[in-house]
Amino acid sequence: MNFSQTERTALKRLPMRGVYDRQVVYAILDEGFVCHVGFVSDGKPVVIPTGYARVDDRLLIHGSAASRMLRTLKTGIDVCVTVTLLDGLVLARSAFNHSMNYRSVVVFGTATAIEAADEKLTALRALSEHMIPGRWDEVRQPTDKELKATTVLSLPLEEVSAKVRTGPPHDDAEDYALEIWAGVLPLKLVAGDPVNDPVLRKGLEPPAHLLKYSRQSE
Amino acid sequence: MNFSQTERTALKRLPMRGVYDRQVVYAILDEGFVCHVGFVSDGKPVVIPTGYARVDDRLLIHGSAASRMLRTLKTGIDVCVTVTLLDGLVLARSAFNHSMNYRSVVVFGTATAIEAADEKLTALRALSEHMIPGRWDEVRQPTDKELKATTVLSLPLEEVSAKVRTGPPHDDAEDYALEIWAGVLPLKLVAGDPVNDPVLRKGLEPPAHLLKYSRQSE
Image (cartoon, rainbow over all chains, first blue to last red):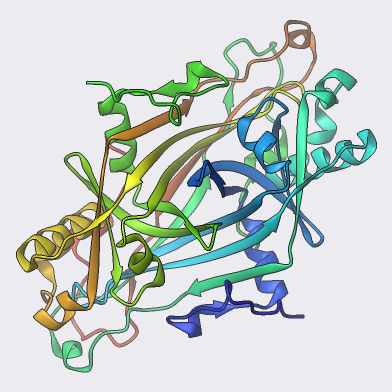
């Protein structure tokens, strides 16, 4: 099912890059885990990076209850959350036609705080599992005090659009005759080998799920 | 020389993560090449990803002269530009103390358009060289028409702050006794092998600089 286009989400330029298909949007949101949250403070824009997870048709973000951003968003002001995945540099034969391959999602709306302790715990588990699948069940669970010190916000995925560019460069017809290499340099966020905490207890090994960590689905 | 702290850039929480040193800020901006641009439209926040370059004490962004974002920013409205580099997932012994290692920069200000053709060309060269060092001199240079179709904006690096988290997890004292692995999973944006344009002329090879492409300085 597609998201409805609104005045804000309808792409004015390069409309062929606009995507409103819910499954495409969800796949982008599920691959990423850091978003950029925009809000207006004293009439001026502020953009802050933070982790997130998607659960069904909601985006969850969380942080310290003392966080200025979360306390501001909790009041129900308008927010814009953008997720960007970089897939490659697009090298054309002309400087002008250089581009990037990327997939991005922009969400407009207002967020509400999840207050009930059991719902908050479920949300925190989802955030953890989104970022590091398999980790939640390995670690010491949140105490009541820690739960209270954490704010979780939920943003409905209603006014949403995605923008996607893939594939090779598009050059002007006459430039294809030039003796200039053209193509794509793929880019990818990859995990290295886990690094032990310097004060790790002897005999502990990194969990197996970390050794095959990847954001890209197979 | 440090950036002066302002009401907006002074970190209220976790002030030890705040960085105002100009060389640290510049190093982050020089490693990244995609920023998230926040502005206010009809009283509501909008956040859009785009490429950028730093030249001295200015941040440059560019795009089509028809771009709604660039046309809006050109009017001199307030903008917030945020650059985020992800360095790793920080796995603590408790769910609560999980974190991320990252380096981010937030710039507040207003942008102005670079109008003179020669300055615009210099700026476009800087943008290209920032994203793909060595490419500019290999490709067909912009025509007057292409220059006119491109808008370049310059944002002074005046009201700027960085936020940095590095190193191992910080657990509660009593949690260090738990038999739970803890440490850091490093993350990095890496380039793959260049992919030829399917209609590439025979005999052309990817330029050498692409084969050793890396955003991280040695």
